[in-house]
Image (cartoon, rainbow, N blue to C red):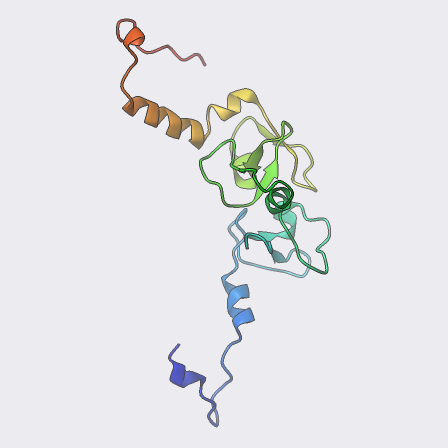
Length: 165
């Protein structure tokens, strides 16, 4: 918007507030919907600024003060901890803890076979079956990087190991 439009003039409507613009641009990073309602508002984490619907992230009650997602609560308590999804290489986004103390995006937990959200009202923790991790984007990226690496001498004569289903 040109700065000249912000000058008050007779008959000109007031400029939109920044709060309104932020709310209109908010899209839940779980369901990718931008509709915020009274019963299911979009909430922003005061640590990482992710936008999430109350129901999509399993928020039981919105606090009066600051709201921190589970990942930010954890990293505030454990400053040296590095949190990344067990299924994909991305470190940002709405994450929940797994039943074995790892981390997974809510989106990954919903879409990858072999993952179960144990409590749907809280949207976590997430049970991740060991064979599910081998099907995630992280495993695919690692296998692509491994394919680019030179084959070790001991495997050159026998070929690569066979993968079992």
